Image (cartoon, rainbow, N blue to C red; front, side):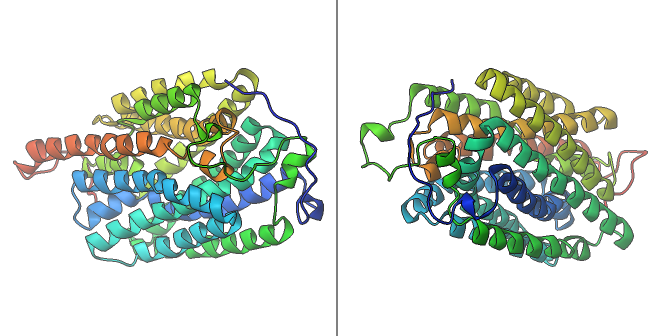
Length: 407
């Protein structure tokens, strides 16, 4: 499914990689930015379910809010991708999205109002929608030199270092403070500031990373062709891939729903939830690296593993057996790793002729197929969970014996 690359002798733009960073160093520094920001928002997302439950949310509310957040993170790229393309200000969009995330997460721990917390959860995901198309465009230029699968896989693996440290930090603070969310999320302001500062430094060093593509003989992206022109049409392979992705992710629950189930059913204490999330992120990193390298060797057929993982998550997580539910959470992490690395690499290869800001948001038209299944697919396990909880536990008004408090 990988199209042949076009070559061109386009001159390297001034201010490109000649300023001193190789393609791999660019990927690694950008990965460090993502590491720090994943420290922030993955730390917060590891306790979204318990936090909303603490504020009085039902399982259905948790599912709808977290599902809507994921849908916003995808669907709003329909606007941010084309706008970034038209403006060509990829760095500005990237920085704005990171700043929004860094600002919303610490405030989330301070609110005592459910609707405010729900708004902040969605706002954090909006920040991802703002930055992701532009960020992936910048990163794609460097991965033209490093290899698409390897470059995105290494970037995703560095993401998961932050996604590992962030939840563990939150877990430690929760354990020390008796499940006080204000300091647990407030401490995440520090890596957020560091991430933005490093991003500004990287922009100053490599203001136009398109030079990485020209140094390996890959054609630079052209100006967007007129609407309706043949060059803007998506291939049949892309549409097949889009339908495959949308169908696969239907019913793939958010970790907010998973963690709500674990806490409200008293399977594990609140402070343990971020530890489990960190373990899932470790599985994410391993899966991202493995499938990234396999993608470069065998192509998009490696994605056949994704629907198998997605089906296993639903079968394992929503049980009342601790070991089985924990195993399901780890499988969930592996599935996310495949989504976040190999899916993006596939898009980069399937539609190289589209303008760059539109192709890397999984992209221009694909969110229409993907966002709706996410908001309903990721919510319906929570609706089922809510009904089950109300029918079995709410009526008799008692806890299951042998379980601790959900604090």
